[in-house]
Image (cartoon, rainbow, N blue to C red; front, side):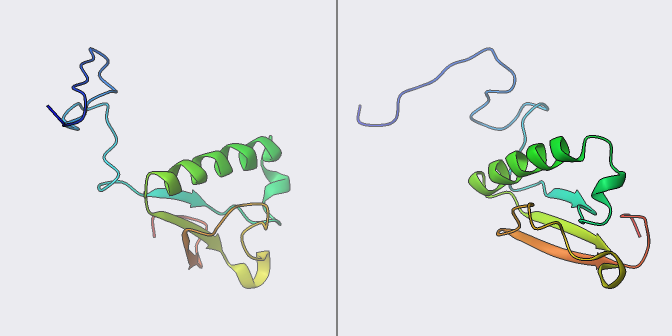
Length: 102
């Protein structure tokens, strides 16, 4: 009788066994932020909102122990990730191509 309470739900996103296709298993995902660099952000429509939402997602990833990878396109020319991006828990990967899949 001393165990945790049994929780039942019909919500597919609330699945303690992580069997629903709607669930995110933090052991099988990575949060990827692509080129959130200070010199590129002015070219992004709604860049301030992008930063707000990116930081919320980064905080969530940190709380859920989801690995975080940030890419930087040619940081020697475009600079590093914008300092407003919370990178404490991130691995930063530099890339010479304007393509995150290469």
